[in-house]
Amino acid sequence: MKKWCLSLVVIRLKPLASSYGVALLALNASVLLLSTAAFGQVFPGNIQRSNLEQQLDIPLNNGIQGEDRDQADFLLRLGGQALGNGNYDKAIANWWQALDLYQRVGDLQAVGQTYDYLGVTYAKLGRYQQAEDALRRRLGIARTRQDFLGQIYGLNNLGTALLQSGNFRGARESFTEAVKIARSIENEPGEGLSLSNLGLAAAGEGKYLEAIKQYKTALSLRSFSGDPLGEANTRNNLADAYRAVNLQQEALISYQTGLSLAQVSRDVPNQFRGLRGLAQSYTALKNYNAALKVLEQSLNLAQQQKNHREELLSLRLAAGIYQVTGNLSNARSLYEEAITLAGTLGDIEQEAFLRNDLAQIIYYQRLK
Image (spheres, rainbow, N blue to C red):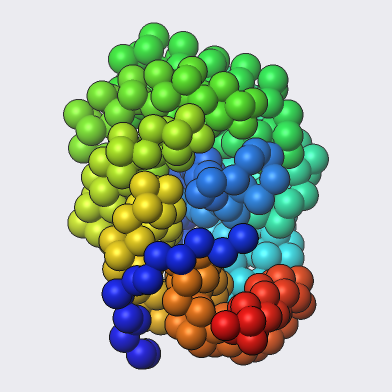
């Protein structure tokens, strides 16, 4: 990759784990649907696609054995493999079969966690009604079993699916109930998660000052309970809220801390979020050199991860900075590189936007 010129001329232009010790999926814990906001965007549109994350280590040592149970575990593992290969429909089909067998042998804990997998995967596909149905069933089972941790995480999963579908009121109710349960059993990780998600719901409604308050309270719990991944996510959410109310210096501090935590925990999505947020905050403060350095770091990470979407975004943001500062030659070069990448990705919409930006550059160059 070519080194970007950082000297600027500022010219303004107009699993489930079975009793047999089988590690099913890489998810031998309750599933959590992460509420992860895309930087600088308004909810519910364009919320970053959620990920499956391991949050609790609750092995299934319930003593249920037999052929049906073995087959159910096998199907659950197959579903996990399909998910890892990006075949969501096959994963869902395997999990429904596993669910039927778990119900047949009366393993409610396994039924609940399988509904978790189904609900989270439906949400990843944007099939929110099916996600909500599966997650409500999972929550009902947790209540039947008086599984308070299952209720906390089930409510957060349900609330996140509702948030992504635009049902802010329902999301807020789910997160609020999760906070109450977490406090009743003095579970700080669950309380921190639920408060962070309450902040996300407030931000989704444009109530950024309320969101900032919730995020700060959540951080006091998440940092204390030693959850770097969760803390990084909340710090990025807090920084997004600061940016929304034009508190750019506060946003910079929060993004920087979130980025450091994400790097320590090898949390690549939050590394990208932190880097993008830093670039935008530096740009808002007109510290263009710092913004370009951060974007170069983001581009390097994207290329290492073979993440062409993030690579495309880094190129476009950098090109925009060069354009606004009058370095039309660099801007043109990066726009052309981004157009080629958009074509490779088959992203017709992005390619059209980029070609329009490039046309403006060519027009101004001809005027000079």
